[in-house]
Image (cartoon, rainbow, N blue to C red; front, side, top):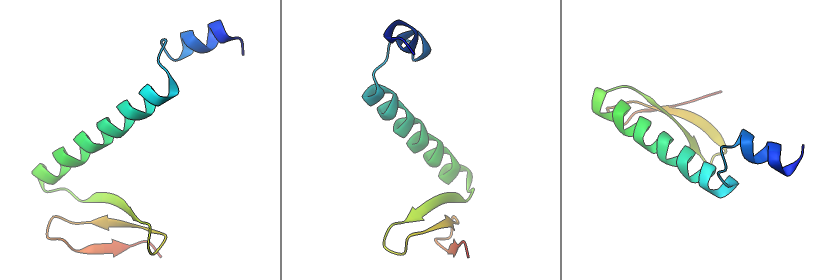
Length: 63
């Protein structure tokens, strides 16, 4: 892919800026879910396993 087409595909944003915006969008979405009392999908790096965290603090790991 040429550089001109790549810039058009990302709307002229760098990879770092796209990553920053994505992380912020996920943070905002998780905050909204917490306010609404919905479960949030997370990842435990110590156990190397995904889990769902419920509003009451309970964690359910994927098996």
